Image 1 (cartoon, each protein chain N blue to C red):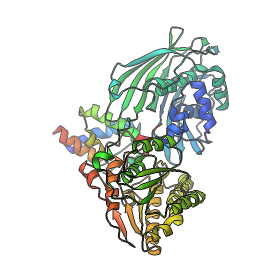
Image 2: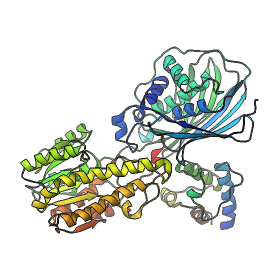
Image 3: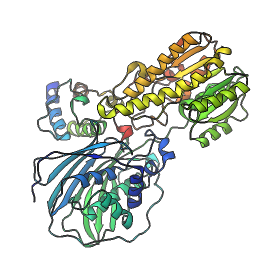
Image 4: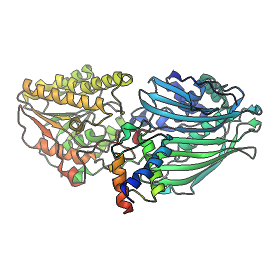
Length: 528
Length: 80
């Protein structure tokens, strides 16, 4: 075995959305978390996630060359997700043992990939032929939770897409890495089987361990595979899957794959059952930003059920807002979709015209907030922290700047959706805490400027929404429970010039919510 | 089993999970003291501890496990 040179190697790696598409085409792993922006938006990640195996290939392609060697085993953990357009650092060190390489891909100080590879002397070069194209799944399997039991298995025949795989491996400089074409094909298969077959749709790939046989057979990289559930830990939603790959009746690789199964979204709590319909807000006009889902949708619905006319702002999810409108037909109020970016002054100016035509605004619920991922306070993250705070603050400050005088004229109400984290300030959410504190400060200053407006800062506990729907969020609270309390608060007379803080939510507390719970931050809900 | 016995046995599990034979832990050790102690390895850690001590943690106990001292307390309680 050629001893590895000992120098620590650091290289920058960045992925693009095209890289994700290229990998999906090669591997047939077209799980929508990777390939669909609209699907990914409704997950805690907010955007398309880079395939863990793409990150693995990128790392292997950048490691020191391994002439006359071949991969004997590979272990990779994916503790946190990777995204397109973010510069990451690959750091590789030998472990002190000849033929063993350890490498990590970092975002600042957060490890995203932990890789350990063992190489051995190559006895021969297998003649790898392109596999023929054949049928694979094109829609991810979607199992019921109860289906994940020991013994559940999938099997079949797999080969990566030849042309796309050539392009992929050439792009990431795979040749000479010591990982041969069949090794790469086995990794592509691992991505495919997790993302498309088992567990499929709700998969978060968390680790790979593969042991490769020496003397790989010649021929097309077409595998007969079997993947069988060895255990399922329902506490974490973790599946351990034993795998075996063979080519031409010879075993090529065996190993263990692990994946987490994202929880299925809980059915919404019925607002109609919590808050009987009434005319208490009849004749009032409200604007709710970010009203297509989560707390915003629940507040909009609660207001309409009390007779209010609600301009329901949304950016992308027209289907969700249409569905909400259909659900509210026949209720005392009215839902009026108002599509646009609430941080865009031009949109706020347009909405202002609409509001003036209707006689002025009574209630503003500033709820819209960008999707977020945990970040540490460090140089690599400071740009993203600043961008998050800027965007988050604009989503509140821009509509307020355009609408406060209208609210002042009607002695209106402003509700700013902050978070309990503005007080508890948990680690790894500096951007979120800073943004919410900025918004709260802005409200206090606005109260001095507009003394006839009543301000309320709402600090909900962790809510079960698209942004927080992770495996360890069992104690998150349905947003409907908080929304109904907010609307009950709005039905009561306001206190002009005052800023009231809402931190206790009767219905949420009654259901066992923990207002002071820290968020589950580092990765379970964020693993790729 | 005393808390000291538990800590000794825990140290060996931590060294195995984090692949570091020189690792030392105290009751105050938290995830921020061990670079590799992220939420994914936390699951591996819990599984390894459950296997080593032949116990099973509840979801509530897992949520409350913030440092090594929490592990030793819960384990000492379960093993007493």
